[in-house]
Length: 135
Image 1 (cartoon, one colour):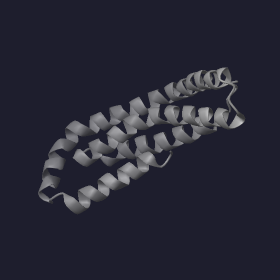
Image 2 (tube, rainbow, N blue to C red):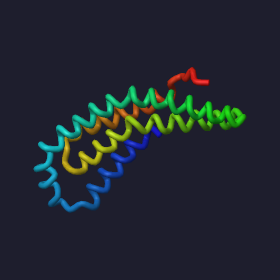
Image 3 (cartoon, helix red, strand yellow):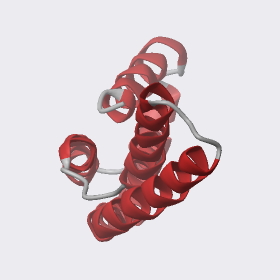
Image 4 (cartoon, one colour):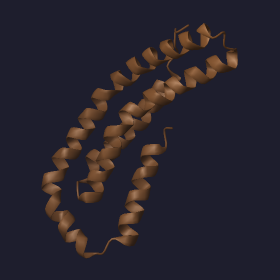
């Protein structure tokens, strides 16, 4: 889960270096002044989405655990429900970071993108390891 955004960054960068013609670098340089503020905005959005990830984890965990308990589910089903909630919640801060990697591919400065990717990794790890007081 935590490696999804860095993996996307690596794949996009590798694909850009290997497959895009060098002529596109001039075009990317022209787009940098326009796309770098977008990347900074996506970093801010990624940071703002971290509390949403925590809230989503609690909400989805509660809903899924209640559903499993209503059907008399086993501990294994409860664990699956909790994992699914983490998976959903951890996706929230990754979405802006993934969009930031696209901005880098199109010509944005690297700094805000790298910060957004790093933030998303930390957010995923923290969300995944948050102790839940859910049922």
